[in-house]
Image (cartoon, rainbow, N blue to C red):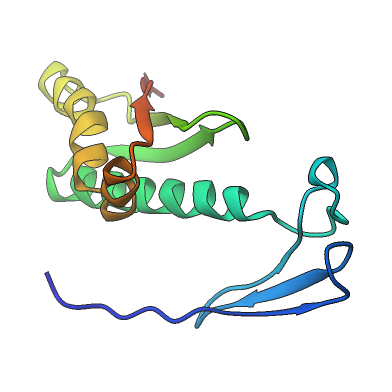
Length: 142
């Protein structure tokens, strides 16, 4: 795999009750400490950004794998969840295949859920830090 460098910058103002701006090449987002932890809550909090990152990674790998297998995908969506206290993330991917999808294609799509988890670089980094990642996928046809 090519060596990809990513740079991120946060500029923060007004202490704990303030917020910051997180910037990357294609991201510009407000970040803040959650109100439950004494912050302003006026922006995404770090764990939220982390879950968004692993969800985007998992989704992009899932899309890539589905396309490389020539599956008749109509739509792919992924909802992910993590609580503040748990070291666990649960992905809930949904693949919608066209109505003419064969049984073999549906079975191939089912295997993609686990394969995409194994192929997600961000998820693999989190697993090295003992974060548990589960996948509970569903396939539909239209």
